[in-house]
Length: 543
Image (cartoon, rainbow, N blue to C red; front, side, top):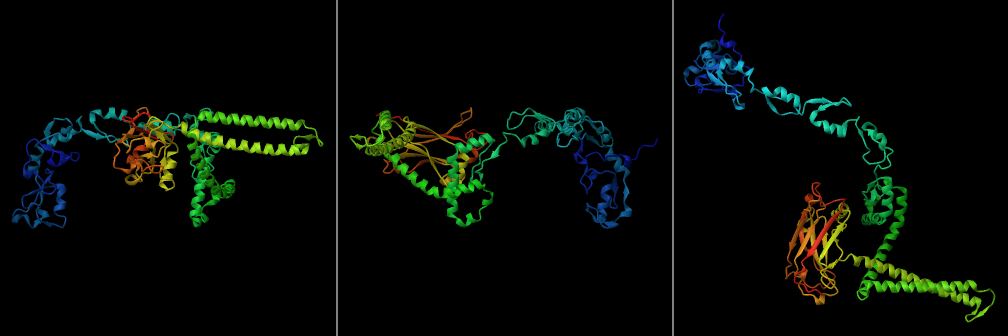
């Protein structure tokens, strides 16, 4: 049997760029066109060689060409008719020793180039790409079957709905996609489990399906069930009035924009309320100013009166007045008609006198009720006051209040006052939820404020106590954010106040919105933020 020709050796599946020869490849065995080992070498008229597949590139412009090496006068004006296969060089190359191209994966086999293809067809270190869409793993031939069976991207079929998908998405399919899986209503109503395919029909009539607040047009973002919205409408009346007041105020500032506002989407019953509210808002503002003045007056009076004594005295006064009214009423009922003469004159005269007296008593009762209501409000404020230099301030509706700051409606918020002792410094915390100064639009800013107090004349000035500000972590880790500072004695922020409060001092870059609002943190929970301030009491006199 005749020996196989060097031209019949198939190396098409061998990656020539990965071939590594045991001995360095002689330059004369390298193709000057592809820069790789010569495969099926063809000798040019000048004696140099190129691969058979590279020959067309040499003569791409016609039957005359110049040798790619072009190192002497014989390399020019070559004819294609002078080219022939060089069997001798071909055999020499095929007999060169090479390493297996899977050497990097652990194969140490060495063979002639002629036989390397046969070895590769059965090499256990041959690497193949997984055929499953999405899998990028490259697998050794010896592990191929094992990988195909366990590949996370192999296609499987759902036993319930017969849909096929990659195995890696089996859990996602069961939890979110399979229409035959039985699930509970996502709104936790009393309905029994149902197939996912029946859920849309159930949601159309679900009593706990969340709906939007009727005041969404004005900025209320509350979502809830029918019952929750009813409770919301009762409990958040003040919030709705505030939102409508802001809407009306903005409309008054820009009447042209109001004319073009999409009022067609506003419910009819709300449209009717707007007209009344527009007239009432101004009166409410005036009343608020008046009530504020009354609270300030009561605060001054209450500073000299213990709460319990005042309430007891007011209660005794009311009981006494009610007893007197009851007695007068009973006497009047027992009176006979006609012209009975009494110390008041005739019975009619006495009736007039009683009527005037009752009217006076009613006015006094009304005045007492108002005074008690005002004092009760003031007492509620005083009861929340802290006298140990520590305050924890709860801010609800964070996102809405932050949006108010973004829109320029309410740039900052103040906490209730707190004190270092009952007769000590009066202080509060101020926050800009959308940042102030360098922190605007990117951070929450926190500031400490020294306020004018009743006993400032007895206290040392300037204020010199260490101040620590916190944003509380509501999660189990309690990774509170904090910063502290020592007051600058030369700053006007810490001198004795000459007005209601000094200029605030603190941290304009306390925490970025990104960190605060991240779902991975728990500084915000139920749209609520807790801010704490600690004032060091060391060195202070304890009055």
